[in-house]
Amino acid sequence: MLHEPTIAASASEQRVAQERTFRTHDGTEIFYRYWPAVGRPAKGAVLLFHRGHEHGGRMAHLVDELDMPDHAFYAWDARGNGRSAGERGYAPSFAALVRDIDCFVREIGRDGFGQRDIALIAQSFGAVLAAAWVHDYAPQIRAVVLASPAFSVKLYLPFAKQGIALWQKIKGRFFVNSYVKAKFLTHDPERIVSFEADPLITRPIASNILVELYDHAARIVADARAITVPTQLLISGSDWVVRHGPQHEFFVNLAGPAKERHVLPGFFHDTLGERERRKALDLIKPFLEGQFATPEKPVDLTAADRAGFTRDEADRLASPLALLSPRGLYWAMSRASIRMGAWLSSGMKTGIATGFDSGSTLDYVYENEARGHGPLGRMIDRTFLDAIGW
Image (cartoon, rainbow, N blue to C red; front, side, top):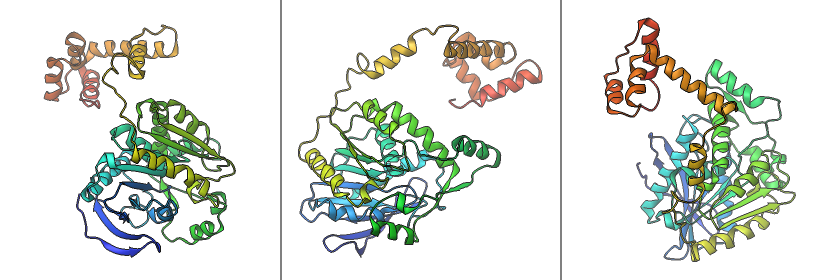
């Protein structure tokens, strides 16, 4: 990653932002704002992650409104949004965006902030990215605040999700425009006007990101017990954009002892940009200051192989399935197809005889030469050799 020199830019009367860029894992240039702490030394850093379609400038008001002068603040424009590079509304994958967060955290390490000095505030689509990063990369950060995470977007057309996925398979990547009006995001008249007039708002979102959002969100919600970072969840009570159910399920599944859930009645989707957002900020500030002042002791996972949710999961996977159950039938058919494939495919025959993780099988795979009985056998063997995972 390349770190570019800073340029001063006024963000508010109290705090002055510096405008910076860095290059993420694939060379894409990411723009971000940095507000140094007023006091020295800084007590920590807070990273702000914006909604989908928006940019970090629309989170900048939080720097002064949270009134945490002893903490540095950072706000990026996600790739393809705002002033960052990349095709508008597009990323190669959801995982690429999550990896961008990891690169961003490494970038601010140049200012002297390690993971234990960092907390996150993220909203909507940005909150799903933040939750995925915390889940997948297991960082030792102080805390994360998630406002109306978009674990399940309300697509009002029947079978819209399935239709988007199907059309993408037929046509390839395409873009879906957001037609959500600002008046359904917030009651704040100034925020409504600024949203409608903001030239940096990116209405389109790539189909691959929309489809992958659903898949990754479901994964994170189901496996939230792997998250032990202190977490505060803010749920907008009158959200027109995302569903409440998965947010509550996510909270219930969280494993960490330090977790809070607050439902804000009457709030629209832009939780941190609502007219009465002071109610939300008055929850966020003490939560973050408490975690910075007296951080939670990291959860001890040294006995996770003997007790806990991962041991429970291992026991479930080791338990035999009823033969006539849907899953039992699925795996029985899978085993049968492997055995039948071994009649024709030399590679699958080797795997059956010596084990698919044996040295003999790996040697065969590394030779990368399809062999078998007849054209069909060689075709099956080629599929075996090209399988993801080798």
